[in-house]
Length: 315
Image 1 (cartoon, rainbow, N blue to C red):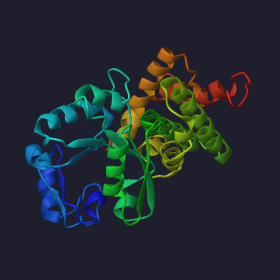
Image 2: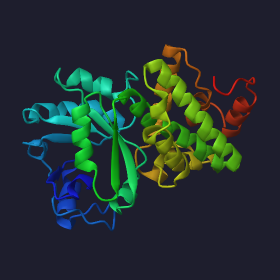
Image 3: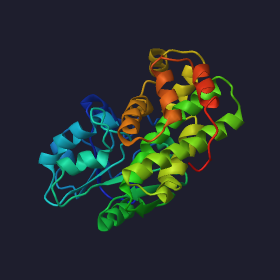
Image 4: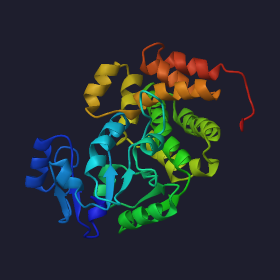
């Protein structure tokens, strides 16, 4: 929707032809964004080949577990010279890899791809409320081109070459949002919420160091910005899932209530794999994973975290 606001022609594809036909008829997404009309230059297209035909830029916006499959479907259909960007946040489930590594494996050798990430609830973007995001790519020209596509009206885009830090922030904030939701669900108070966000950021920075990202990226929009939004905003699926678990509902009940993908559930497992592989301590992520899987209760997780030995804050 945002890319079409400047009058640029945009084609929208998805797996459900029925939903796309409804969107074309209504010129809106009544299921997920009721009340917001599509810009005139946005056209729902149920055929993937038609959707990407001749497009200079293809944006992939799917849950992280479907990223590789979607990219594989699109690649043979892309126009010569077409570039790829994504807004998916998370890891490849089977390998625990960040998505730019998946893209590097699949894209032509000359193309690095890019991610658009940061604090941006879809409903607020649709309402044209002020929003700022990050475009991350090692290809400066590609990042700049994508910034120009989306930087319009109340939507501001910045760029960085630190794709590791940007992707890691976008993935880990979902886990921390589950944890913050759990804490709020069992009424631990605003002190606990602040501690969760701040120490969650510390975990993000430690893992970023190990994977080659830069700490300054994690203090920006794709790190701290997205973390604060997702941990405190009730439009966040991950926060709502955590609230439901803290209030006593089961994993299945919480998912049924939300009726959308909760990325942080799978991401928590990937984080534990990365922690083991890199030797990085992620105590909050570990306790959230154990709560999500039902190994421990939310209050057990709190006790485990609060009983850890004191340490220097910057470690």
